Length: 129
Image (tube, rainbow, N blue to C red; front, side, top):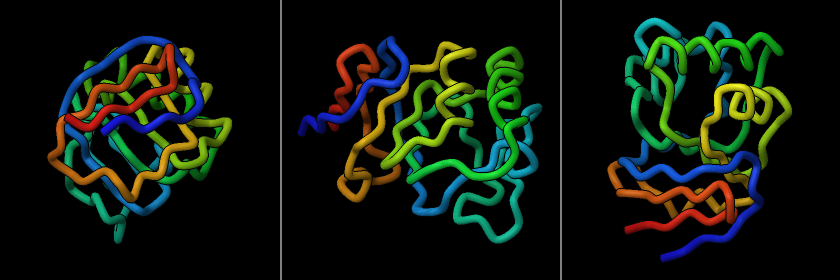
């Protein structure tokens, strides 16, 4: 199944989806050294997003979150792609400066954790394999 959305940052990535219906704050909500979600009570608390296609509705929190995504990329703990229902500026800037493929305007209810996805940020397409 192919889902068409809006391209945020170019590039293509293929990998396993990790999905949440909770918004994510990268600053304080994700440990950039381990790639694990550390926000207490978050749907993904304790789970690693490293090397996965991270699917979530939108971002939240401090603008420092953009630089947390960048730090994760440098630490090799970042997700390989991000898919949002409605991206916020923090996540968009983080993907751009970190060169992480990103697409939004996607109905994320169609995507389940564990599914293999191909994210084409250049075309704004998310394919469920």
